[in-house]
Length: 159
Ligand SMILES: Nc1ncnc2c1ncn2[C@@H]1O[C@H](COP(=O)(O)OP(=O)(O)OP(=O)(O)O)[C@@H](O)[C@H]1O
Ligand SMILES: [Mg+2]
Image (cartoon, rainbow, N blue to C red; front, top):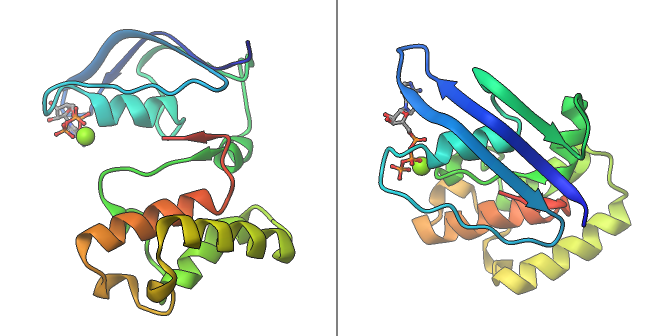
């Protein structure tokens, strides 16, 4: 099976000295669904940021797609990242503009975007929200709009 992420003995220490992740090992294979469960403050979000390549481990190594080094741009194209706060990915004037943003960044063809966008809008039932400014949505609607904005770039991995 294709190994997408392999983390070996990774530790992450925040600048204030907090050890958020300590000597963790992890593998993600193509097609797998993985849930990371733990109490508040146990390091789940930090671990996800490491696995998604948003931050680098203080110690240890992470290989993506079996490579020692991978271009930041390539990771951003393949990985869709939705953290706890939906406002992190909703920053345009309307929900529709947020859906267009990431696909435009990775140079997706307009017709491919329209096809995937219509599918996602149906799936998440957000057609009535497309012209609204994200800050006027309810919290649950924001979560769905944020998820949609990740899915429209057809990520290989969703965090
Ligand atoms: N920017 C930061 N600077 C210093 N310490 C931090 C920072 N962000 C998180 N921490 C600390 O790192 C540890 C892990 O935090 P993290 O956010 O990864 O936990 P979590 O498992 O996602 O928690 P939750 O269930 O509340 O989302 C906690 O002790 C937290 O206080
Ligand atoms: Mg968290």
